[in-house]
Amino acid sequence: MSAKKYKVELSEKQRKRLKALSSRAKVEARKLNRARILLLADGNRPKGQMTDATINEILGVSQPTIARTRRKFSTEGLDAALCEAPRSRRPRKFSGEQRAKVTALACTTPPQGHGQWSLRLLADRLVELEFIESISYGTVSNILKKTNFLLI
Image (cartoon, rainbow, N blue to C red; front, top):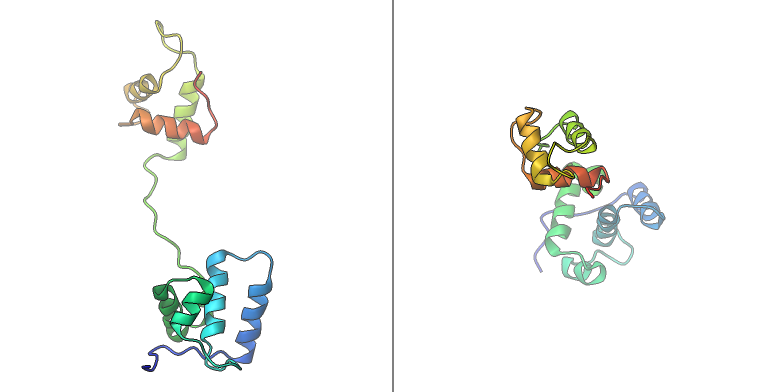
C-alpha cells in the first residue's frame, strides 16, 4: 500500500468537534459525510486510520469525495474541508421588477376578443408593451408558477 499524499491527523480538539457535529440532529448531509470521512481517515485514531476503500464501503461515499476531503483538510484546514464552496449559478435573465410586471399583466383583463389570457398572448403583450425585450411563453409559465398564479 502506498503512502497517502494527503494525511489526516486530527488534534483532540478537532476530533471532539467532529464527533459533536456528527451527533447533532440537524446537519447538512454533505457536511456530515465530510466529518465522518475525516474521523475515519484520522491517523491519530485509536484503532488506526482506515483506507479510502474501507471508508467508501462504510459510508457509501465515492472515493473522489474522500480524496477531495483529505486534500482540503491537509491544504486548507478543518473548516474548509467541512464547508462547501458556493456553487456558481447562471444569473437570472429577468429582474424581480420584470417578473412583477408579468404577474401584474396576467392579473389584468384580457384584450378585446379574448376570453382569458394565454401564455403566448401574455408573452406577446409583454414584448409589445416593451416591458421585456423578448420572452418565451414557457418562461411566462415558469414565472407565474413561482407566484402560484393560475391561468384559468
